[in-house]
Length: 96
Image 1 (cartoon, one colour):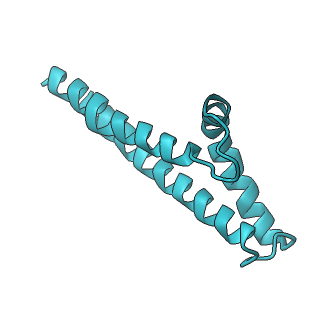
Image 2 (cartoon, one colour):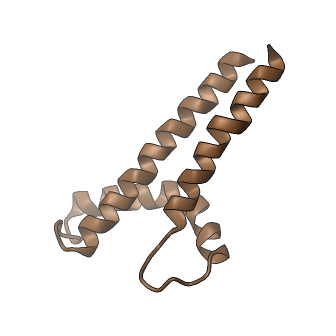
Image 3 (cartoon, one colour):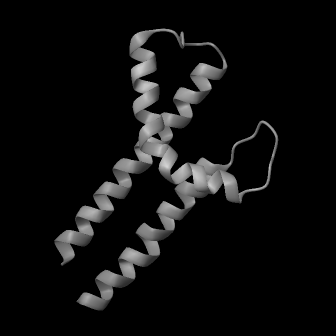
């Protein structure tokens, strides 16, 4: 069971990197650093959006409107950190 919790921890770490990549990519697109009509850029953006939007969408709907500032990735990363540091740790301690 501890190996399974370790795997879940690894998946959460990997997903955190995906969320960071989506945030960086959105900044690059917003400030016209990369061309959004480039096929590779579109493919990467579509993949990142497909991976992050299922969790970011409900958070965006629950948060109040802050105008152009999107705080949903911060809330998601804090939630992932909470799951890693509190939930998984306490489950592992209960199993030992």
